[in-house]
Image 1 (tube, rainbow, N blue to C red):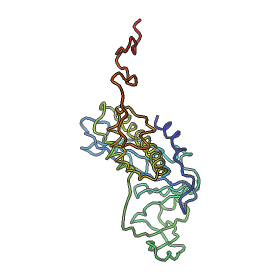
Image 2: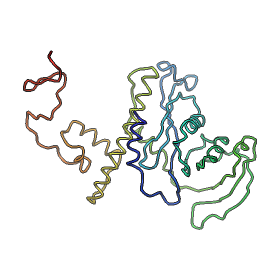
Image 3: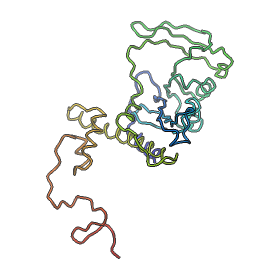
Image 4: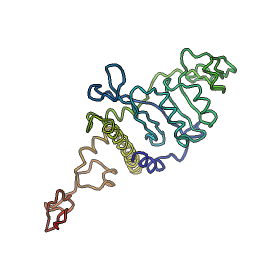
Length: 291
């Protein structure tokens, strides 16, 4: 259901023009850990006395929605999980795309496979990495780039890459990362599960991922409509809050996206727009057949 939802919504969120300096799509790869009680969830062993399940996600920056997600046990290493994503879904990253990831995903052999498929990657170099400088470029003036070099990995493991890499040292005063996982943790808090088995935990996580995809899609529609009316858009957290308090309002979703602050329309006491649940009869009609 999650994959089908993403395949239908993603084409509507794609940008018509690429960001400056990018030839292809931009992706981010990261993971977050959901702590679990090991005595209640014995299958989710993370450490000796701790249980957890990880959510590995590939975030597409066209609309900021997850294109791929996996929920293995907490002990599965990030690099191993990403290798399974990359090799198991060859169409996920098209040529000329750029993947941003942290140091936990450093895999020299995988870097070689990505280079063969013409997929670019940006990550942090490990402090113990052994390399030799092949070429040096002068950094642009009045920029936060300290150095720009072309390097070749010189270690035994680095030889599995087989390609020259570019090493850029950048000084960044402000760090604004992991916004997607903050949205899940702050706005779609997963506090409980319907059961203690693995089959009860993972669908709950995918429900949250489906919700984040739908909410990002609704926010883009709302931002587009409010910009046409020259009105200021509201934040993602404000939209989630207003949607929660408006769930049982009798109002069109299209009208609500244009202006979520409008009061609900006046309705008569016997409004026929109410839902007929549990076989309740209204004017001789019920939800269930009486035969």
